[in-house]
Length: 346
Ligand SMILES: [Zn+2]
Image 1 (cartoon, rainbow, N blue to C red):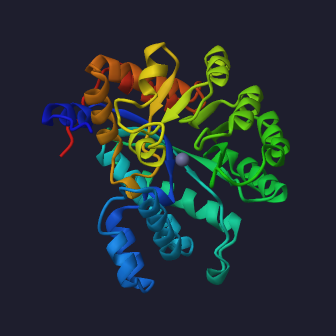
Image 2: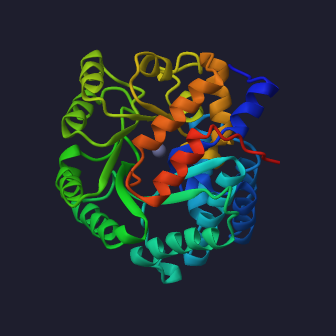
């Protein structure tokens, strides 16, 4: 395993960063999770689980179980969204694309519309208190869960279109990679794209999904997440397509250990080494106990990256983002990145 030096950690923290693959619930602030879990009647096993970072896949799913049990209601969703942005800002993230599956919490009277409203209200709460020179700009991606039928996927696309003017920029496909079939989502995803939304797909998270991955590459989404398992044929098509990949080092090493036993063996080196566009991301920083700075520090250490390498990856990540390149926000972020700004973080 790789342990970055103090200088590498410090460099990764100071450089402005772009986060493109982070799930709202998985990014919950740890102290908030503990507080909510206690209020929800945490049992001894659950309290043991959230004391440490996930080191195995079963521990990871156990943390998710606690999160889903503890996070209920619009007020909580709103709070979590605000705190995720505050934490990102404190970590030197200047742009964050957060994703979440709109879920009704019926026992709290919250429907899918209320869910999305709550997340966007959390964004607004953050913006009202953010420091101008440090502000983390944010956009929202709505996720289709692979377990959901086509009608639910269509409803998610409708929601994304409804809130497009308030910060929703795209659609993601995620959830248990062993569930569902590509044909189910093809219609809703095609409609989303034709309506101007961007698309990112979790893909290649488990072995033996080459045919699904082949069809996903043929669909030409705007980005892929993970691609830990990729046949040589699909790899050639991916490289020819130029479709960027969101890479989450700690998450991938933990969940795909059969093919990525160490950080050094991560496919970051393969794709980045040949100039294919990649972004460094966290996936679920609360679950893995890793910030984006930490992921960047690991990348610096594992792949011998220089400060300029990391700056170049970050600039490219902004161009991979779903943010409108003609927008004022994009211009402001680009200016901060191009200035090579180093942030004075506590
Ligand atoms: Zn993910």
